[in-house]
Image (cartoon, rainbow, N blue to C red; front, side, top):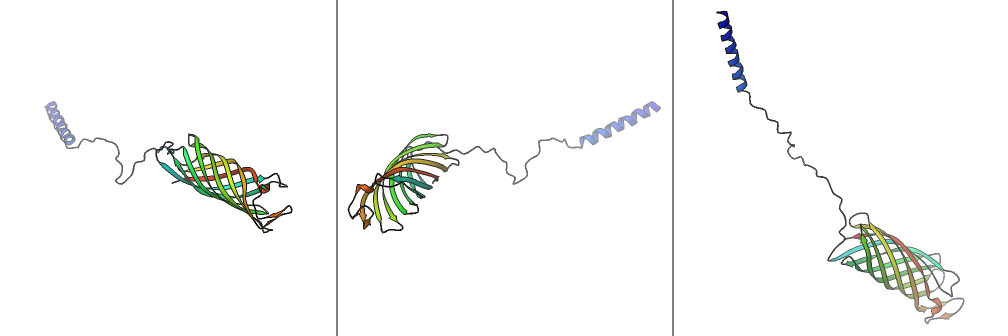
Length: 217
């Protein structure tokens, strides 16, 4: 009798337990969802400059510009320092035209020059470029202590090496050579002559050097 009663009690407890489990919802873990409005981040890849283009690109530049020029009839070379700026148009990432202006001075002279240059980019890899240019310009020289005003036709040749450290911003250095041919003289009197006519005695030539920043737009 006791065994029968114990069996009945055990069966009742089992049924209660089964009914309790059946009322409990099944838990499924699908992972923790992102909160509403939270943005997921993707790994960013470096943005490099496109080195192949079928159109015309424009850039502006600002630079330190210096020169060391002289002539056979000068006692010493003139060293001038200043700044330059301008705009460059590049076609097919190879051929370019630059319109520029620079201002230079030393303790005796001040000069202003405008020029136009045609260039060829013969190297353009890994955000680094090398450009060679040949141009023509016009320069005005004025002495601080004398009433001397000289005008020159200039022929600059330059080599420029630059690197784009951001997509549209490059730093560069340059080295060149310039010929200056006297165009005319106005009220010029020196220790050697007085004249208002052109004289090749004041022709000059010498090296040029620069360092600057270029921005593409």
